Structure formats: C-alpha cells, structure tokens
Length: 411
Ligand SMILES: Cc1cc2nc3c(=O)[nH]c(=O)nc-3n(C[C@H](O)[C@H](O)[C@H](O)COP(=O)(O)OP(=O)(O)OC[C@H]3O[C@@H](n4cnc5c(N)ncnc54)[C@H](O)[C@@H]3O)c2cc1C
Image (spheres, rainbow, N blue to C red):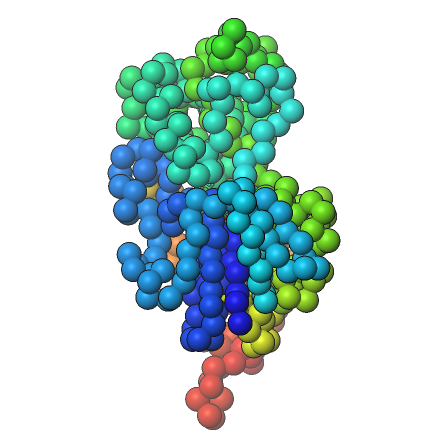
C-alpha cells in the first residue's frame, strides 16, 4: 500500500503520523512545497527574533525518520489525475498512489486593489519565505502598514513591536474594531488601547482605496476611504486566505467556491482521495486542520471516524499578555446576552438562545473556559440548571454512572 500525502503542515503531518500508527508496513510518501516543517501560528515570533527557525518546528527533530516517511521536500505538485491515481510535480516527477491525502493548505488572498498584486513591497504573511521577505523589507522601511486586523494581522503588528521606536506601524481594518470575527467591541477595545499605548496607530472602518507606486512597482503611499493618505515602505497583507486548489484544475475532484469538497469522513468526490485542513477553505485554524488530518487518515486506513466540528470556532489569544478566549459565535444577533465584569478587567460574555449557549468571550481570567467549552460542545440546555449561568460547574451537568463512567446528565 502506498499512501501519498501532499502538504507537511498541521493536516499533512498529523495525517501521515496517524497513517504510520495504523499501518506500520505501508509506504508513506510526503510531498511539500515547503522544505521545513513549522507552525505558521508562531511565525510572528520569528520575525520579532523571539524564536529561531528550529523553535518553529512542531514535531520532534527525527519525526520523519522515526515514522519511516519518505519526504520529498521543496517539491510542488502541479497536477493530479484522480482517475489514473497519479500526481505530477513541477520538477517533472510523477508518482502513483493507492490512497492520497491532499493537505496543501492555503495562501494569502490579495484583494483587487490596482497595483497591489504586482507591488514588490506588498507581502502576505503565510510562509517562512514570506517572513524572509518581510524581515528584509522591514530593514529599510520607515513606515509599515498592516492591512487586516484579524488574527494574522495582529500577529504581524506584534512582530513589529520590538521596532516600534524606529518605525511607524499602522494597522488598517475594514471592520469597526480588531478581531471582529472573534471579539465584540468591548473585548477588542482592551487590545486596541494596549496597542495604542505601545505606539501602534490603528484606523478602523476604512478600506484601502488606491495605491501610489513608483516606476519599480514599489508602493509609496496608500489612500484610505476616509481621505487619509499613509506613507508606506512595506505593506503586510493580512486580509484573508484562499485554498490552494489551483493544481486540482482538471483533476476530476469536486471543488467549490471555498476549496476542496470533503465529507464528514474527509473523503473527496473520489473514494481513494481525501482532504484535510485549509485546502477546504472552510475553517482555516490549526486545531481543525490537525483534527481533519487525523480523521481523514483513519478513514483512509479503514477505521471509521467522523469529524465533530466543535473546534471550528475556538480561538485563544494572548496578545500584549492579555489572555482572551472566544468560543462559538459571540457576535450573533437575536440572542440573549449575559455579561459579568469586574474592576480588574475580567470580562465574561455569554450569548445564548433557547437554553443553549451559542457563543462566549472570556477576557482576563479564563478559569471558566473549561466548563463553558463543555456546555457548548455538548449542547447542554443551561436553562435546566437551577443557578446563575456564570456559576455553573462540572458537577451540575457531569454525572458518574455506577460503572464509574462519566456522562452528561442534568438532575
Ligand atoms: C501568520 C499565521 C498565523 C496563524 N495563527 C493561527 C493561530 O494563532 N491559531 C490557529 O488556530 N490558526 C492560526 N493560523 C492558521 C493555521 O496556521 C492554519 O489553519 C494551518 O496551518 C492549516 O494547516 P494545513 O496543514 O491545512 O495547511 P498549511 O499550514 O497551509 O500547509 C500547507 C502545506 O502544503 C504544502 N503545499 C501547498 N501547496 C502545495 C503543492 N502544490 N504541492 C506540494 N505541497 C504543497 C505547503 O508547503 C505546506 O507544507 C495562522 C496562519 C497564519 C498564516
């Protein structure tokens, strides 16, 4: 049996590891455009020089050898023939497979702003090579602009904080506050103040209207929709990602507007081809990619596993040493909202509908996150618990049977 895995990141590495655990004798070939295994979530620490390349790796140094994986690194897959079960790479290699896991992730999506795609100093933050380009461009830059205040944009801002006394760092965002997917205005304002105090200029509720570029395609100025003009020597693009499905054109696999289509088993429209992670374009976060990689690999081997989608909307962050957790959909409308806050800056918000918690934000003290996670994940009807929602503990909904098994049960 030959398993081929495309992608050596969260989904691909965890998929390959699971395949080896299940099938000690099979041949496993891993192919990746990247020639290193690293976590994208901590790339900003590399730019800030808080971590070395070595410290970005999320597997043991001898992971590949120990798992007897053949790793074709620095190889880009450019074509897949699903019917013939063959892939082709940019360096003219072809490889057949019995089962294939596609975990090729995504890339930064550059919005349609004239000159943006060709500009030599507009760089997305996604890979190690992006980091090298950003570090190099930042050396000569006086004014750095970050487009997008989502998790990646805020990572980019923190990456430049060590240089804040020497450079102008400006964050521009379309939405009225930062981390608009994860936080409400109240929780976001705590981060906005901390960044402002550190010297970061932030402009919300604006879009980039146009760019002034020089003869060498270098952005010099940015015109915003509020009329403001920003000087710019480096633009970090963090306004969203798109799935890497280009090489699947003509493959015969089903792809939709988000990315590769998979079912709850990770299976694509071909029975021997599976997909996992950001390639689906649906939930581009690390824990989902890990889980999907493991589930797809299990099903490739024949151990039936289904994806439970709880991890989809759980984000934990600690920017500026302020811990925050966002669960579910905390900004959803037409729900009841409960807030608990104290003078020390601890903030809890729970959003619920028909007895079920649909979203929550915790900032400062995250002690309640374990209970909340269980309440949301197990869809516990909190209206049946006869105490205030912020005082619920495990004992209120977690019971032990006489066989000492834990079950979810309300009295
Ligand atoms: C800067 C940044 C910060 C982030 N921070 C967080 C965070 O704090 N928390 C969180 O949960 N998530 C975070 N994410 C998202 C998270 O990193 C992704 O969800 C996760 O990396 C997805 O893993 P993946 O394996 O699906 O794909 P990717 O990590 O994108 O890896 C894709 C792999 O496929 C390879 N590849 C791509 N195309 C080809 C091809 N044609 N041929 C061969 N190989 C190919 C690549 O070389 C790579 O090895 C962040 C992402 C970025 C960019």
